[in-house]
Amino acid sequence: MKFNNESLIVGFALFALFFGAGNLILPPFLGFLAGSEWYLVALGFIISAVGLPLLGIFAHARLQGSMFSFAEKISPIFSMIFCVLIYIIVIALPSPRTAAVTHEIAIAPFFNISPLITSIGYFLLVFIFVIKRSTVINNIGKYLTPAILILLLAIIFSGFFTEYKPMSTNLAELPILLGFFEGYQTFDAIAALVVGGVIIISVKLKGYSSTIEIRQLISSAAVLAGLSLLLVYGGLIFNGALVNSEFPQDVTRTELLLGISLLNLGGVAQVCLAILVALACFTTAVGIVTGTADFMAERIKKPHVYSITVIMACVVGIAVGALSVNAIIEIALPVLLLIYPLTIVLILLNVMPINFRTKFIMKAVVIATLIFSLPDALKYVISEELFANIQLYIPLSEYGLGWVIPATLAFFGSYFYEKSISNRSPQTE
View 1: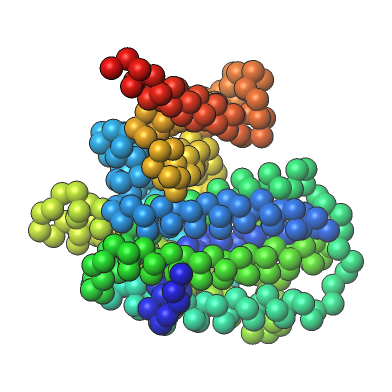
View 2: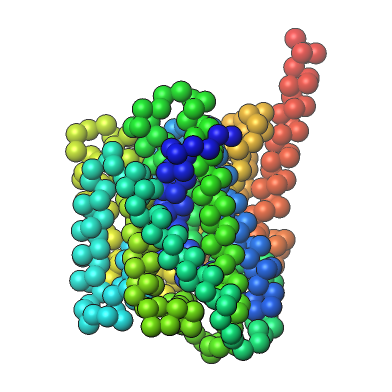
């Protein structure tokens, strides 16, 4: 694996594309809940918010196509439905959430303006930044990411030298699972499918054409991005744990982040945090809008499709971004519980050797995952009592992991079935 100036720029850009609203406000709150068991909640969070996204980027480095390539082997129609659903989700939820977080932390404490005005100004800037496609990754990697990292490290490391009340015990049950599922709310496994496509196109726009060179560049960039995320998440979770005796238990995620910054940085905290939030959220919104527009331009292949998609994505962002952060998180939960398991299995299948990801195996695993993740999602939409009763008969369903055992059994069952068929074939000829 080679590391050079280009991989540093792409790695920094990849970090910034991942690190957005959820990545900033969720880790400290996890540490706050976990207290002295912060390392357990950190482990769960890192699995879903670092490990899975990195595997998604490695899969992109292997496939070197778009998100469509992840499920194309199952069925082109299924792949198209999956892609469209993902892009609708990211445009309607995590992208607008970046504007909502920016308003609550970076704008509202200083200016008495409505969330709608913030959302309009925010997505106008996103539009200006995204519309010139060839410069997106360089601008993020060279200029925005270093500023984000400097501010993040200032908040994190200043906490190590601040005196707090003694850390209290764990306030949450099953901290590893709490961390794992809170990692869903970062949208980063889904983001890996979206921004991975952005990185592939951007690298090709830089002049790279060799499959091997592209794979090496993206893989090394992913490792750099992953190490940066690991450092930042660990620091934010630990800072949240340090202050869990300083704030009431009903503190909100954004209030806690602001409180930690004030304790660690004093008078300049609000200004530093405002800049950090605005930059971190902005880069994520840029990645989502760019990825969606890239996909539409690739599939439709008509003039101005990229520009029209950017405009539509920004308009949706303005409308939803005027809502509160908590409202957007509540809307996102049932959607995530349905689409995230599918995303996870597609990522895992696409990083496996080719004999473990045949069309038959992928179909079997995806069908099993979809069927057994439905109760987790539908109980929040139709009837919690009805689907809670169904979940009693599905192992691990009470933890939101009812799909894991069926998907695993489908994987091994379909693999050994195919193997037995191939072993019998020569004898029957």
